[in-house]
Image 1 (tube, protein in one colour):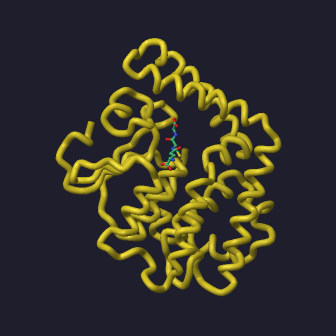
Image 2 (image 1 turned 90 degrees about the vertical axis):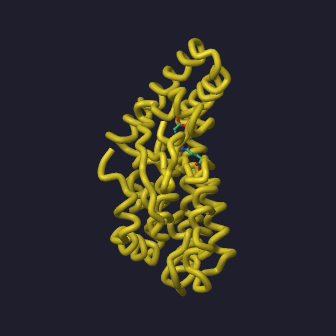
Amino acid sequence: MAASMALTKPLLYFFPPSYATMKARVLMEEKGIEYDLELVHTFLCENLQRSYVQKVNPKGTVPALALPNGTILTESLEIMKWADNHDNAPLGGSSVDRTKVDFWLDAMDKFDGNYFIWALCPPPLGPILHDQLIFKKAFVEQHAKFVAELAQFYTEKANWTAQEIEKLKDEDAKNSIKDEVRRLVQTAEKQLASTEFVAGEAVSAADAMFATLLNRVEMAQLGPELLADAPKVQEYWEKFKARKSYLASVPASL
Ligand SMILES: N[C@@H](CCC(=O)N[C@@H](CS)C(=O)NCC(=O)O)C(=O)O
């Protein structure tokens, strides 16, 4: 795989619709970092193929960022911290409040953007994603039986997919993740009453996080419900969607 070749630029293993990828990518674009891309089609379970798991990311997830020095970062938060500190010039500089940047990095890392979409997206996308999860469960169950050296990896993935499928029936879990979004939107709404961006007067890593959340809200067609009491967020979102960083990172289609 490409990670074993000598790299001249960072190489981002990505899947365009992936929530975790988009957060990192918006920030890399805002920072003007040059990088190459390698598509890992998670709907086709390419992230669960032996070559990807063994050579790139032992967790079998995207994104992963291979650096020219041979290091591979396998968590979006790690990638974002690396990108923000690139050139020792965190995005937004002294125009943003670092405590607020850290708040958004932490809150959005904990937020389960995958479950949000699986559980709340209306047809046609919601049922397609649900079927995809069932397909993935069958894929890893079969691989657990036949790929001895990764049996533990595939068994853990099979347990995880089974739990996620079960959780999709849980109305309390769905309401609770919606409430979490409402709280985050209200935090941003208060901030945007006095500054242009969510951590201050300049764009920062916090905005890469928050804009990706708003992308998921839009994907789930929940804007009218979840952003109703947040006029400043609505205004911010319309402007953010026109940014080059966002346009470069958003999937053209599924
Ligand atoms: N904590 C990880 C989560 C990564 C993650 O869940 N990625 C999803 C796409 S958004 C993925 O690769 N899913 C495929 C799978 O687990 O099979 C991160 O932030 O990088």
